[in-house]
View (tube, rainbow, N blue to C red):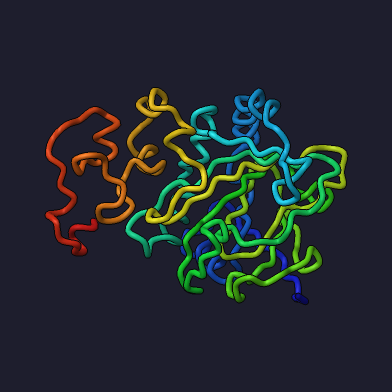
Length: 288
């Protein structure tokens, strides 16, 4: 469909959370410039290098036949955990998904778009939930793509239809309706699950690398199964805050308990005792 293209707005890293969230609600996407130093990105990608090399290419046009999608970042890269738990991102996600009782990590993935890869079909990430028509004023995802290399029009920068988070569902947009989210290495694109977007075509001679870390409301299923992506022997070494974000928490009242109504974090830590999720009555107090 025809659409007047609007550029993705850039904000400095010291912008207040309320201002970032206001742009996200208006446009569906925003770029925060220079959030981490390049050496943090280099260190994470260095740790992940052998896994990226071993990752097969996508098997269809959506996944990308010249694109690698390398997951399990928490298990494979200690440095990646800094990006997952980055205070600015966590605060923005808290603001954007605060209407739900809880939110969780949805997926972790390095997306390597190699030369010759065409543009990805424009889509909404929330279509992963079986194309369920969520209310237009209820966001279920808040997502990030960290620039592992500079993102340019030529090398396949993520393309966005800014403002399309307010559009109808199941629309069809073309590449001409989008704009490239160009940004420098160490910057981050934050976008909601309802905004139409897609990976760009890589017409350069180098690989575009993005670190895709996304979050969703706790009552929906995760796209990447963190309990299998991060083996238990690795999980027990992680701190509680990261584990809770990974899903070792209650998605809402009684969602996600283990066995005899045991909290999942207690089950992982081997703590025993009677489980009680709030006295058996679903009240605001019980949900806290």
